[in-house]
Picture (cartoon, helix red, strand yellow):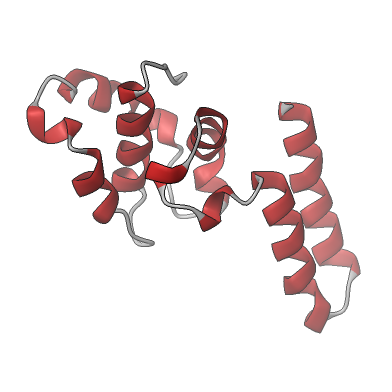
Length: 120
């Protein structure tokens, strides 16, 4: 499954280089939607484990200024015992396009409350 995602992302980059400027962004968006399984169009609370896992692994690909979610893993795991770090909807509302730490924290929260683990 990860190979399929990698190939879809690679296809996205190839399409953006070979197409004309007007179609380039539409093709990239279509390839991106295919690669993420339309995960980006949903709130974290509506995602299943597979979607949350892929967003955890590839969130930083969507914006080059973002860090990978796994770089925050130790911080999130250490702070998990605090009640404020278990309020997933409140954390999800803080997720924005400027800093992905809150977005990654939201994914960590929802996945952990499902009883699942994410890799670091």
